[in-house]
Length: 260
Image (cartoon, rainbow, N blue to C red; front, side):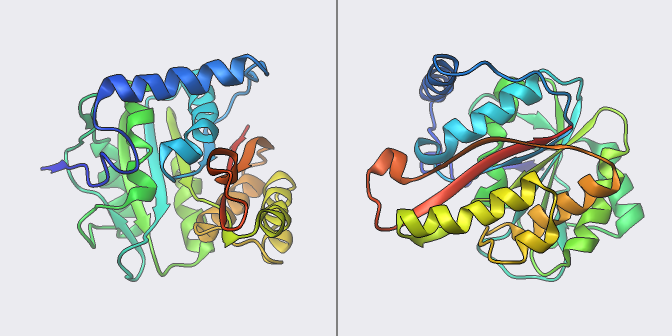
């Protein structure tokens, strides 16, 4: 069984040539203004909107991930379409992308089943995780992957899973989230600053004081794990949809970060 693409052609282009143009453009714009930081990191927070809006922010994280000695990746995102109890584990053998298939990290699938009693609870057609797949296949073409989608679960339970993954050799974690939705630009900046400060300072108290990330459970879980594993947070980028649309009346916020 293959995990088929469900938002190809809407959130990201169908043609590889168009995807490559995006990646090249994001990289060119960044390199004209900044130097890519040299950070040793196994855990990342990335956004999951359409590439035209959040792709630049995500691209920075994946370029840093490309520098790491990671052979397997677990991508964790919130469910936007279906509500359910717990975490759904993708049990398919591979994941389709426009660049070709990503193979499943079957050993990790088996271990997550055994350690946390995870299984495939829903058909996997979630954009918060899927938009990461073309980045992963492009920047780490030989990497193996596992997709986890969560709904009704505590951040503590999710953090236990993240802890286990990050303690494995050659494994990394992607936490997918966007920030506030559909506020004015000024209000979005105010609300998103709460999220940014919470991540940067590894402060659950700050995150609980108004952060409106759609993947807030994943963000809190990552902060919990970072504190337990003595990791340091690095904010990589923040912007809103207004940077591309020029519409400042209803914006969505995006962040990328990594943990070393």
